[in-house]
Amino acid sequence: MAATPGPSRIRVRIVRPDDARGLVPLFEAFYGAYFGGRVTETSVAGRLRQAANHETVIVAEVGERIAGFASLRVTDSLDPAPYAELTDLFVETEARRLGVASRLVKYVEGIARERGASHLVVLTGQKNTEAQAFYRSAGYEEYAVAMRKSLKVAETR
Image (cartoon, rainbow, N blue to C red; front, top):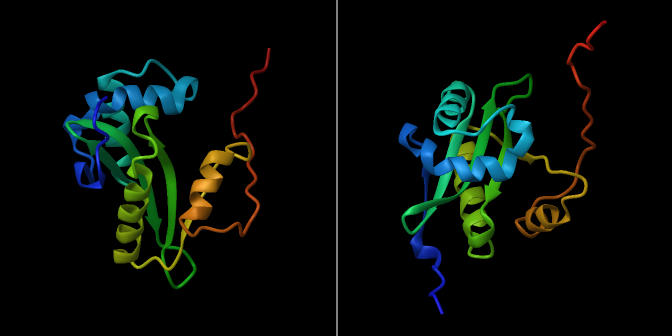
């Protein structure tokens, strides 16, 4: 029976450009068809560059591999304090229940706090009850209804 990595074997840090290869299987599992194309090292590297101006991507390593990632957006707004949003959080199946998600969230909360945010908002799917339970256990509470509208222009024929 293999030993289960303890919290000390989990390392959380800001993403680096050379992490693209290790993120490929996680992006495939998390984004799937919503990625908008084939998930390759090159496409992941491109997404990381694209996000660099407005998001902070964090990775969690368990041992020598990337086992999870999170993305934080902190922006100034009309409110006195910046707006912070945890935009993505994913942990590979094999690393769940090891504390990876908790470590990622704590790290993101620290960055948001350092950047002056007074609150951190997280959105998750209505049917993602596992994620909702996790966020509640981490001290998050429901406070709003999120709505969305597609802005894609319908094709005319």
